[in-house]
Length: 232
Image (cartoon, rainbow, N blue to C red; front, side, top):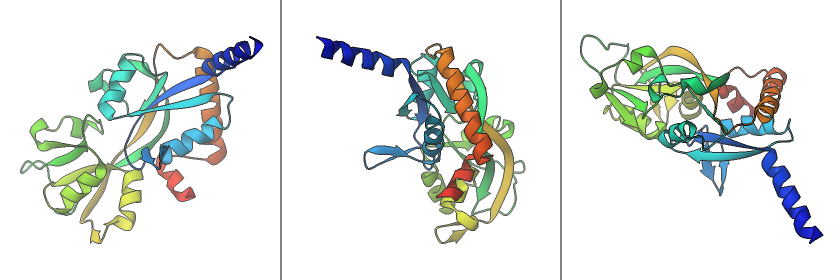
């Protein structure tokens, strides 16, 4: 009897310290390999986790399902770019590591979107900047991942590709993707990811998470997610 009570007590303690973190699967941020999740976002969160007594539970889904899990309070927090079009901005809690966003091409040598409509590849549902968000929908090509986007822009099936710095530096170091050199690379903006909180999140746990998060940023001096690539 005492054994079962002890197990129940330990289980309740673990649940009380559990933080369910919603993430979307996208290389090199979060990806599955050999039965577990890896990536720069996982690396960063693991560093944060080491500074707390919390138990981080990663809920990894495609981007649209992450949006729904935030709206339906199925996770405690979600980490992603703010997205007013998705209706989750009211859940923004605080900013965290993000990216410098770039627009790239293998076909063009400058950004020319006005004289003739050009196609731009974006991760489906993602928000990058006003000029991309407001660009005519029929010329925005939704993509499942950036590897597909790079293949399409190399094959000239896309004019341009929106790509965050972490992905660009990982897949196209020195502006070379595979054996092909980019003809155009231009920064668009810098955008922070935000921690979004749901009604499920406990204020005490959020406070612990925020303190550990800020401690790691100050200690390591991280400015962007791509800073973690340099540590590998």
